[in-house]
Length: 298
Length: 245
Image (cartoon, rainbow over the protein chains, first blue to last red):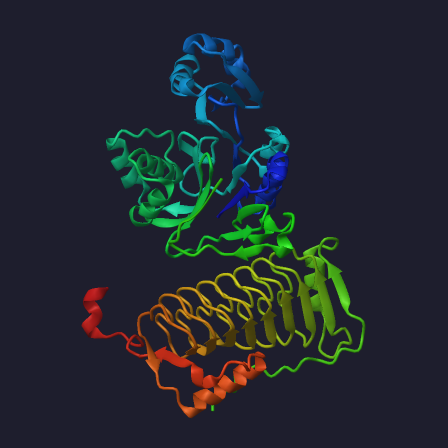
C-alpha cells in the first residue's frame, strides 16, 4: 500500500495555497504509508533560472559554504535556501548540469533530488505530517505538485527509497504498487547508459520514462509504452514542468480517484484525500480507467 | 422459481426522531458500536450519518432492521456484512461496499469503486451511478442492480445471485462463473472464460422484473436485457487439461 496525492491548479488565485492544500491531502493518507513521505512542487522561477534540490545526511557539514563554492565552480551566481536536510539552489538554467557534476565532487555524501526550471523535491523517512512540517511545505506556493506516503515493499525504508523519484529535468514519478520486472528493466536501461541510485522498483519506472522522453517521445507516448514494458501493479502519477499525468496498469487494483472543477484537477489514492478541497461537493469525481493515460497541462 | 434469496426486509416505519452522528465530531467507532447495540424491535429505526468525508468502514456490521442514511461519500467497506438494515449512501462509495452482505438493502446514490458487493450472500445492493471493476466478485446469493456501467472482471467466480446492469459491462464479464445470473442491457466489452450468453426464458423475465421494481428502475424493461451465465465447462477437473497445469 502507498498513498498518492496530486494537485494541478487552474485558478491562479489558489497558487499561494498549493503547499498547504497538498500537504493536508498527503497527511490524510498517512495510514496508507507511514514509513516515509515526499513531495514535488512546481513553482515558477525567473526567466532563464533553474533550481536544483539536494539532500544530505549531514546537512550542517555539507551545506556550509556550499553556495559560494558552487558559484565559483560553475562561474555563475548561486542562491541557496536550506530546509532541514535539503537545500535548494537557484542558478542560471544552463548551469544546472555543471552544478550537478560539481556537487558530486564537492559533497560526495549529498544526493541530487531533482532539478529543472520549476521542480523542488523534498522527501524523508518519518510520518507524512512530520515530513511536511520539516520542509514547511504548507508555506510553499506553486502551480502543481505531487505528494506520496510510502509503505515500503520492494526496497528499504530510506530517504533515497522514498518517492518522488526524479530522473530527468523537471520530471518526477510517484508510484503505488510493485513492479515485478524491475531488475530486468534496470539492466536494460543500464546498458543504455542510465544510472541508478537505489534498488527501488519505482526508480526504474521513472528512469524508463525519462529514457523514452530523452529518445523523443512525449510524456503521453512514454506512459503508453510503459503499459507494455512494465509488469506488475501500478498507479503512476508523473509530474512535468507544465502538468501531470496519470496511468494505471490493466488490472487496476491500486486505487485512484480524481476530481475536477474550474479551479483544479486533483488526484488521490482515496476520496478521503480530496474531501476537504474547496468545492469538492460540486466537482466531477471519477476513477481513472485502467490502461488509459490521462494528462493535464498548463 | 429461484427468488428465495431475494431480500425481504421491508423498510421499517419510522416513528421516533432520527439518531444523528456527525463524524466530524464523533469517532467512527462510536457510530458503529451504537449501530451494533441496536436490537430487533428497537424504536431507534432511523439513523443519520453526517460528514463521512471518505472514511472507511462506515455503518459496518449492522444486524437489525433499521434505516441508515449516510450524507456524503464514504471510503472502503461501507455497510459491509450488513444484515436486515437499509443503508442509503447519498454520495459515492469506495472499494468493497456491502462486502459480504447477508440481507437487507444498500443503496448508493452515486458511483461505487472496486468490488462492490463482493462475496455477498444475500440482500439487495443498488448502485444508481456506475460501478468500477470486479463488481459482484465471488457473489454468493446477493442481488446487485447497477443503473450505469460496471468495470472489468465483474462477477468473477460469481456463485449465485443476480447481477443486473442497465448500462454496459467491461472486459471479462463473468470469468470462471458458477451459477450466478448476469443480466446486461447495454454492451459487453468481452466475456470471461466459461461465460456465455444464454436464452432469456420467462422465469428470467420474472426475476428481472421483480429486481428492477425493487431497485426503483422501472424505466428499464426486462425484455431489453441479455442473460449471461456459465457454460459449465470449468466445473470439474478434466484430464484433457492436465497439460495446462
